[in-house]
Image (cartoon, rainbow, N blue to C red; front, side, top):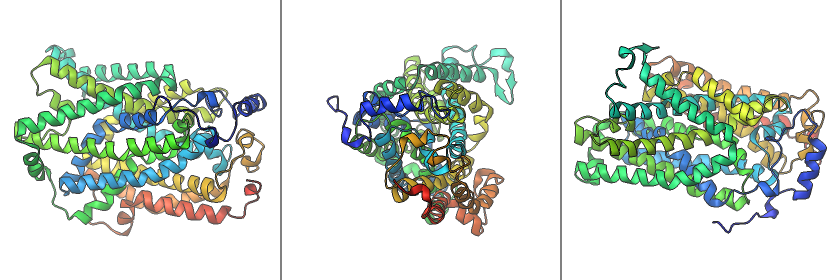
Length: 508
């Protein structure tokens, strides 16, 4: 992959065109260095870099525990694997479609949104996406902090007794210290910028795959063989629902897991060397890695049931069962790398650009990243991860409804109505064609609101039900389990109807 070169046929403008564009538009209030289209010289991400990006983002504790949540609800292990593979194969489609504009025009997600939502209206989908990323940033930081907390507790008995067992908001003081230590490391990386993320992902991917393989081999060896472990996985079931009862929500949750990245993937593919690089990198890195690491999670959790007499679905807690400091240190390094690579790529890049889009002249990429880090704490990640049911049926499915509607509008606008043609100057002109007069394209806003409306009643019921699963679902509860699919379809069709004859489309 190192010999991969930039394919200029996949890129709309030459290096000279980019330089002229920057000179012409640098004074625009919609322009800053971070939101500007990437030039030919900045297209340094190869197929391996993009595949490594997805390996780094997929190998994370929330992936490890995902299939276990499906099994708890009533699936067996192979049904959970098929569901995750199918969900990630489905979300790969909008992922690649939205990625195209990033590679062709070098634009980030909030800049792409200007074409459909307006130069000011783009802030609506951008901030919705940013807030979800802030929630995820908090979740992954919390898990990373827990790993450090486990390491320090194993190394020193006094760590767990810090402050005489004092707690804040029901959380031990030592856990808070570990959380903010991990948070501080992430803030340091945020200040380094996006190029550092490329190297972080590329170097971490092999380590994460090795760590996962070691964990699986250990579990199979200690529990008496992989086949026996998988047979015993049925003991993880807490409920015995029919497969088809659990499947819709589980599939939507699997799609929703990366529905966020299916929107802001241009933030990364704007650095890709070609369309082939972005498509192959994503296809190789996403579905198989997600499924493989979820499988490791199921197998190891089942093995702990045989080894310790109880299931331990959280690898951070499993780490505490080992006596060797070296093993605990190795496990901490793997968990640390997993949480760090996912958070830096999936939950910092997008909101940094999204917050920057609010006021490009005042908010840079780094400033946007620092805002993300602060909001992530305020969203109380320890509450979002209070139970697997709440995590899957409220958090994942809930925000997938928002992401699906936005994805439907963006794909309809770029692929169907504009046929992959954009006016780059217009995207940075506050009075240009994408301003729609007032800066807002009300048609996109209306399509978004109407698309999301049908799944809101089901979300409210799930959010107020312990565990997120409604016992006697009504029509709106059932509709909610398909949230991403429902809102994507409505958003796509309604936006097409409202925009199909709009004069803004002429000349593209």
